[in-house]
Length: 193
Image (cartoon, rainbow, N blue to C red; front, side):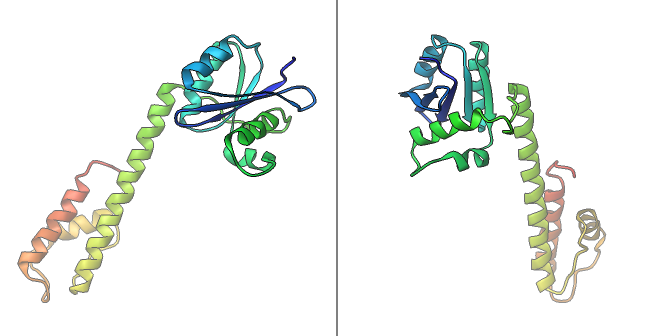
């Protein structure tokens, strides 16, 4: 039995493996836990292994590459055309095994832990900036309904709150001051553009 390509469908607790031969015929279909999968692939002949790119695929890709396998990560949208019938884990694994063997397939590089950590920090920072912008826009809308307009730019909004020595006619000082403090607190959240 000569394995040409292997597809692994990743799940939270179970992993489905399908191995294909040179003719595209299914040689092996198995379901594993993560520990069982790593043990099985350590005893398997070195081969081309494909997985859908996701957060957990990078760890498993590094582990399989250390065993000597040629590991490729494929974006999920490039695997979808190879799914033959109704979706289940073994059919997905077979589609991955077919897709990984294509000459013109685009792959995702396997990332290190440091790269994944940096990517997570950037995503959290982007979310903080988006949330800050949302809160400032919401405050502007509340204050605008009370006939007190703030400038659109974030820094101009904070500056206007700091410089306002008098409150508008329709807003009581009891409501204007907390609004200015809220804008300043949002500005002091630490995420810079």
